[in-house]
Length: 407
Image 1 (cartoon, rainbow, N blue to C red):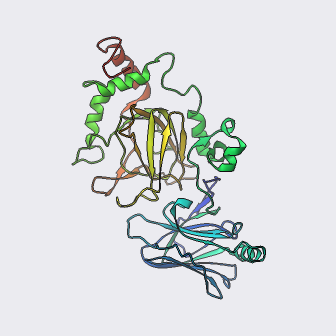
Image 2: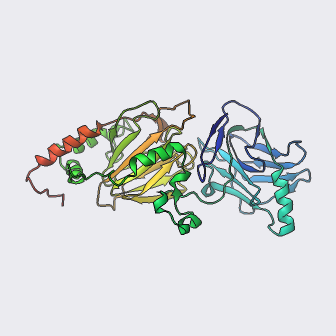
Image 3: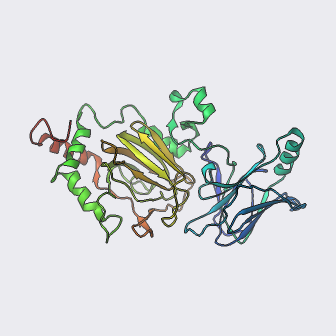
């Protein structure tokens, strides 16, 4: 097993590296057990003696939970879903002794993906009994399933997507859970955040105040580098079915130091109506900042087979910074919506957590036939070379001071 530190939506977790049918919770009475299953299965979570606990059954129709030794059913009348037939699906069960709450879900372990919920009676006497019972639970035993990950903390509220540093946080934002405090990211993500969140980390600088306009000009003008490169990339994700709009430009900053999937800092350029395929991020952590325009992000519970629907959609505007962890926000699709006017430009920063020794070098994505493929993160051009090229194209444009599509 591998232990990773983080918190507040980036929970401490153990990767289960070798097959086993028994694991211990990281903290007694709380946490999330994640597993793979392809047919009806059973999970038991018990006290140290195995005498009392919970039996959780995932069937094709629903999730069934009972307390034993009395076999008392803990029923969620709204639960109408169990195992699914979609490729890539995985499952989890959450115990929360402090709030006396149970959850079960599919895909990423988060409140948006809950399919079963049970709240114990919160009246004082019942609350104490339930808390005492749940706090005895320490051992998880598998029947017909494969453990993959243990999360230290239970599922509670929704996870905020936008990061704020200390200067941007007040008591209202902490109380509402509206933002992810930068301090609660993993140390790896904090490092990435600090590298790209400064006030000087902008496109239009004193040495090239028209950088953004120059990129727009290059995209809009036949014969210019951005225009021609985007055309050439129409078959990047589907070799036999060209798709002009399923393209974007990747401009890399620095070198690959062996600690990230591809070069860790990538400026991505998204013309209006262009989008990515649905993809994941090789179990790496990431921080993404919008430098120009806005980007629409669809989040998916798992990669799947093209039939998986997003559990959330969010728009991020210029200045917003969002995040990805090995267990959350891993599968998404980005799009610069047709209704937008400006090219979206983002800085994407990727890095493996310090204890990740497998280093999966690819982003998996779904092609036009919804088959999973591997994309090895590449570069269309190095940043400083690209910036000089944009300066050259901008200075040589005709007429010299205007362009029919650029203000």
